[in-house]
Length: 370
Image 1 (cartoon, rainbow, N blue to C red):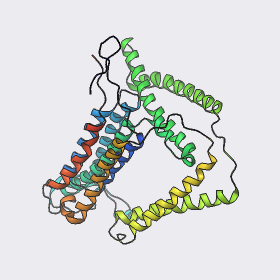
Image 2: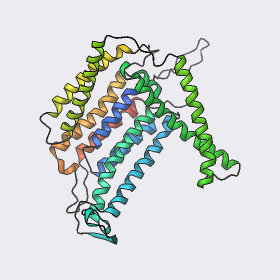
Image 3: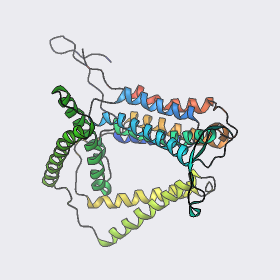
């Protein structure tokens, strides 16, 4: 980018580009999560995790909510470990012939038939549990990427008026969680500098009480600020409009749920997409009508520019191509465990996932001037 020159002849710093629309980050991340639901191939799931991690590393800013990505990574790892522990202790519905270890089995009464604790642990059951847990972990990491990249306050400004109050509650929760993590890290560092313990029950109590006190103070200050700005005030609308809005919104959401189930299952392939589109249209109309009750204005609304369209399109393309791959070659996306074989990397689904790297080139974090 060319540098502008000041009146004195000295070059000035280039104007930074406006941040990307937060809705584009959420649509991109949810599309990657949708793509993760179509496969249990660990190679493709690992590629999805690497794609989201690279984009987060390249595009996230130095903000409190951006640090929550590490917490989502730890949560995903905990999900995998818990799922494997259940498969080892409680067994797996997948039969196997390769016995890894035999644990002492606890006898259970007759009414608990079909459930066991201990016994033989088969390699096939462990691999099946690992594939299933990795898919859920990938979905959590994609949601964590959206939470780390999108400014929750700016996202709240973009919500329809009908969802404003619910959005405030969600945004407050998403904002306070990273602040709590930052407070815990700050207090633990302060205790270590003073030579005091920060681990164990005693350290947890000494750190937890100030954190809760700070959270309570922020909550009271936030409540006072929201009340001073008129939060919760609504406009009067005719009863017929309220009933129509409720019917369209609830009916549309039910249609979206039924259509999504139809799209994700093989039995509902014929009706899934039409029901999903009909429900989505009804829900959008209901939200539009419900926005009449919200008496608020937007200060400097975020523009939905060409970069937002491209970022959303990159995530949507990944999800669409994964759906196509699941219908054309399901064996490559769902590797079998009976017999136990090594998964292979299908080339064009892997290339489709790499389309999700486009935001790293469109919206990188600007470097600090030296």
